[in-house]
Image 1 (cartoon, rainbow, N blue to C red):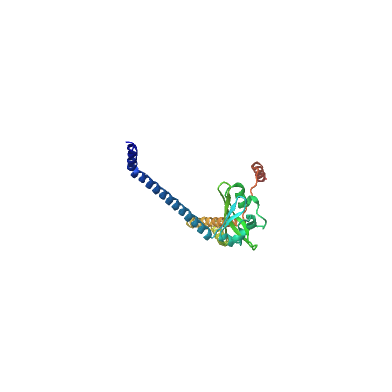
Image 2 (cartoon, rainbow, N blue to C red):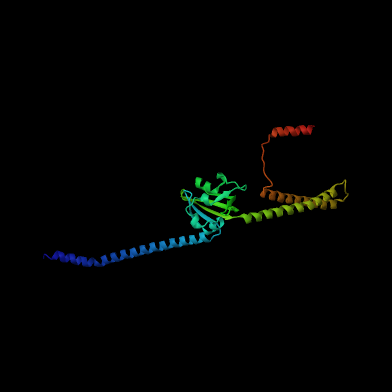
Length: 264
């Protein structure tokens, strides 16, 4: 009789063994699943990081990672090639020792026009395509440069590329358009002038049917001349020859001046 409670307890444990084994097996299965999930996630992250490294190392654009302290933490092969600095020499240095941007006059770029300084100070993206980069061999190249902040003031990513050839081709295209427009505008102006003489009763006598034809031709010549002038203005604006110089004008004094000239 004294063994009865223990016998009952033993039998109860035996009855619960399948449940206990199930819980243990389920727990191990969950651990394996979690471990498998963690492993898969780790592999995915490694794959993504590997792909990012491949992209950064193979693109033609130069890429720099600059810390909040201004030190270079990453420089890709294209940046090394463009600037002329090796990775071992550039890493850890202040960016000002590696990237030197100057204006068209050769002077150091002003802070309010410097995309790297602006991005570090304001933590906002900054871009420029009007500055020149001085390479390690003192060669000056025109670059398009973009500075983008990372996180909350943790640093910036700088991406830049050489656009010297691209801008040279744009200038050549603008010069061709300007020259062609100027050369074609001259004969069009001559045609317009002779058609105007034909329409003038003082210089020519034509019937109404011919006048109608010549009037339409004269209007078309005038329209073509305006198109060529617009092309000239656009090419001049793009290469800087056409500049805007707005001034404040007093309309009342201008009206009084015109009125006096008309009365006189």
